[in-house]
Image 1 (cartoon, rainbow, N blue to C red):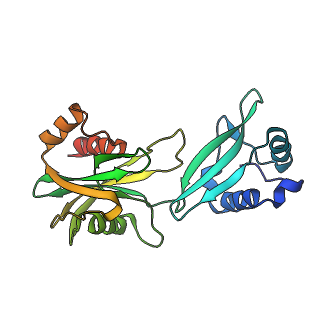
Image 2 (spheres, helix red, strand yellow):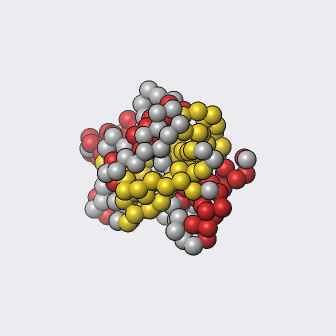
Image 3 (tube, rainbow, N blue to C red):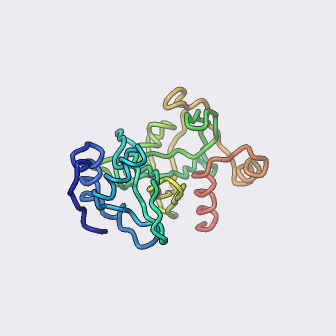
Amino acid sequence: MAKVQEQSGYENTPEWRGYCKLMEERPKSFRGGGYPKIVTDVSVVDRFVRENHVKIGLIYHSPYNTFLVDLVEEKDGFLHTYDRLLGTVGEGAVLTVPIFEHQFVLIRQFRHSVQDFVWAFPRGFGEKDISPEENVAKELSEEIGARQVSKVQKIGTIAPDTGILGVYVDAYVCEVSNVELRKNHEGIEDVMLVSEEQLQRMIQEQKLVDGYTLAGFAMYQQKK
């Protein structure tokens, strides 16, 4: 990553200060290696902002997501912005593939981003100060009421949307001691146990379209 040059007024904006802090804290998210490459010379950023009336840097962050607008340069020198969404906690996001009495556990949940209900495996953002395995148990306790989680095994890693998401999600298969409907918790409306054949049929009939779940199921099939 290029050394940040601080030579203009834009260096004093909260967007740029937050961006520089994030570059120091999470260098892997700015490591580069190909095109387009991230521009970190603040004089170039300042000129681009003034000419195009845009904001660049750390635009917004919540406990879960951090929204960035990078200034990037193509191989031919063309400059443009590129939106990115990072997990506010940089690591530890998990997808669970829970099994109860030889059947998969799916939840039906209202997903705000698509404004629709979807069937999916439980999953969760990274959490500070807990391991991914602990996060698996936490999410399953919250979303399906699992009192015990056992035989936790990592089956792969997912890059869910490399067009905008700067996130890797680890997938874990596990067994749970029980299943409960946690209705209305984070939009959950139903829970269902399905066999492998039933899950395949749901995919074929387009009743299961969640990308995380499709990836997790494919990884499970390769590992079994």
